[in-house]
Amino acid sequence: MEIALSVIKADIGGYVGHSESHPDLLAEADSCLAKVKRQGLLIDYHITKCGDDLQLIMTHQQGENNEQIHKLAWDTFVSCTALAKKLKLHGAGQDLLADAFSGNVKGMGPGVAEMTFEERGAETVIIFMADKTSSGAWNLPLYKMFADPFNTIGLVIAENMHKGFAFEVHDIKEGKKITFNAPEEIYDLLVFIGAPSRFMVKAVYHRVTKQIAAVSSTQRLSLIAGRYVGKDDPVCIVRSQGDFPAVGEVLEPFTVPILVEGWMRGSHNGPLMPVSIADSTPTRFDGPPRVVALGFQLSEGKLIGPRDMLADKSFDNARQKANDIADYMRAHGPFEPHRLPLEEMEYTTMPQVMKKLAKRFIALE
Image 1 (tube, rainbow, N blue to C red):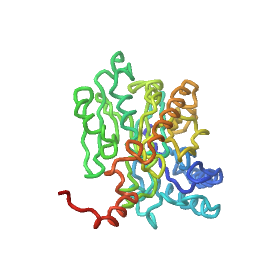
Image 2 (image 1 turned 90 degrees about the horizontal axis):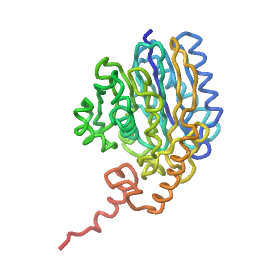
Image 3 (image 1 turned 180 degrees about the vertical axis):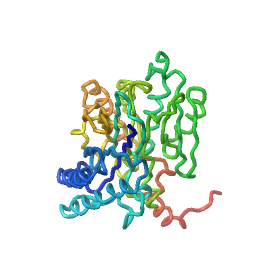
Image 4 (image 1 turned 90 degrees about the vertical axis):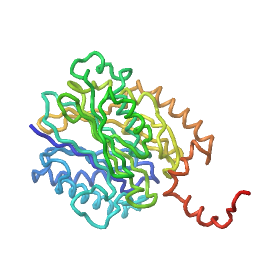
């Protein structure tokens, strides 16, 4: 059975500030999707949140980039925005950058990750969602899952993974893409994905079966809006088990709280803290950035679950380490490397300050 799995998210109002999603918004979204499911467009769905981002997880047979599915997500976000404005939530509708739907939510503000595949006998998927960070945050975790034998022992000892995976990388500033084969092109791959603000892993494929293994959202809100309007807060779908890394190998990268861009006003580097859904409530300096993971088994398109994968106590050390890193980074205040480098500040107040002071700069003698 061929299934499409779509994860579409948007920040349509924070409670309180940017820290949480109001339960009434989740209930409104559930009402919107339940009606459409009864009409047969969806096979199944799950509504959740990560911080102040509303997450729509949907299964269907309409394929990727389907206008009906994307319009359903857009209409749901619009309906929830109306409620957010009524509740006077913070930043109501901030991710809706267009006045009206135009066939596809890509380029309109919401983040999108979708994949289509033939459902296996045991179809395990893990959906990652992040808050207070940007789309490139998945680069290092995806590399470790699908190319690092120190993380994924299956690359060494499992015959069905030994030939490796292919990484589709997007240059989001030039609008180009390239595919690298691991392991033989790892060094070339790392030249690019080590710069996650520009080069992002969009998808990963099994080298032998050509099956999709993972897909992420690569939308950059600042590039769409031309100004800072909030962080991208990306999502990522990863298939697991069988020809793909085991669940434990998929989760292992998050035992290290890597530094990602985002945090306060989208202008700082901070640790990506793995947490449960309940703990995805960033408040310290509007952070630190959070990542959550929901695991599902699929059965003829039905979402069996979810399991809150990062609620596991074995991630307690990572959470403590993230807090320690947060202390260290915050001690830098407005200085780099806590604050982003100048080239990443172009959508903040930096251009206006430079323009105001332009005439006071004089040439060096």
